[in-house]
Length: 429
Ligand SMILES: Cc1cc2nc3c(=O)[nH]c(=O)nc-3n(C[C@H](O)[C@H](O)[C@H](O)COP(=O)(O)OP(=O)(O)OC[C@H]3O[C@@H](n4cnc5c(N)ncnc54)[C@H](O)[C@@H]3O)c2cc1C
Image 1 (cartoon, protein in one colour):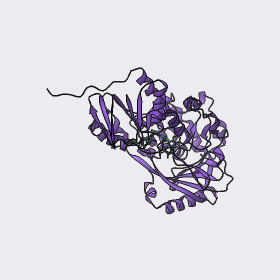
Image 2 (cartoon, rainbow, N blue to C red):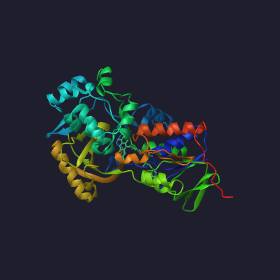
Image 3 (spheres, rainbow, N blue to C red):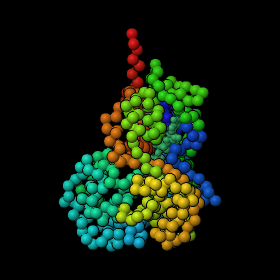
Image 4 (cartoon, rainbow, N blue to C red):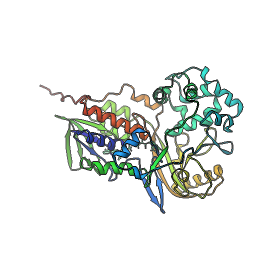
């Protein structure tokens, strides 16, 4: 029996893939709702996303959608929606082709020429900061106005606190990028065309809910695991009023929860995991009547705003008048501690400053994102006892396709018996 702790997307997908391979398992989720940070809600009739706003219809997502019979629930964004960056009093379009780059007003001509020198610069050094890497490769302006907000925005982190070898390095390797960032792009004629952004008619929550409904025989909602300890068969999970013996366990929770769960069976790992930093974010849903068209905007790192970015749910999926603003993150964590009405007022004011449109707040939520910053050095050399495994967005790629890929890979390894089982506990003679 394999025990999975955590019924966010990772744990649910792992349970699903194990079920398809006929591997016995039980999943424990603390909340009464499956999905973890994926949470969609209706407020005043508007569909709002508190966690991820969208995913992309890449292979792993499309495959799961078909397996769950959700094809008719999928909504995709219109192709070619622009991504914008706020800089020097204006929203400016991010260039996704050489032609767009030439005509873009996001970078000045000297800044564009500096970008073109990139192939002559050194490749990444695992020990350097991400901000330093991008600045020496592309120049300060392209870092602050283009790649810094886009890359840092994924984690709500400050790239000055991120280390290449602990975050960006994995991404570059997966994309097959060695010394130059530009040359692989030019080989593809410079055009970046990722698969369509997608969601579901009733929001992202549809995906974990369907995973839960397909696999509910092996899933226990409202069952927070309070304690994990070694047992004769491997491990024992305890919850209020119950206990289960398992040969292997997979921890699919946030880092703070994982640290608590591992404290008895792997105290050194627990201490290291507890050092990982999370970035606080205020998510403010706004309603506005605008003519804005696009995926949304990020704010240049050179601008002094509390807002890091805004998603245009209206353009993306036809959610009339809905915009989602993210405030705070590593550069301005204090704003997240302010009262809801104060955070909402800041979001409205800054939305007006950036777009010129009036908005009214619909709801305020708070989230935390794994920072993937220098605190990730704590994971180097991390060891878990045989039979204990991690599957989490702080341990491998945090995006939804990355979560599905990790769950699928783990399920295959379990089915093949390729993962080490728990060693029997030491017995004193
Ligand atoms: C604000 C935000 C925006 C994002 N935007 C995007 C996006 O646009 N696109 C994208 O691809 N990705 C996005 N992501 C990333 C992606 O959504 C997450 O990485 C992914 O959903 C995490 O899933 P998970 O299952 O690994 O973790 P979680 O969702 O954190 O799930 C962990 C689960 O463990 C449970 N748990 C904790 N302790 C216990 C316990 N003791 N016993 C039992 N259960 C326990 C929790 O209740 C929770 O349900 C975003 C993330 C956030 C936070």
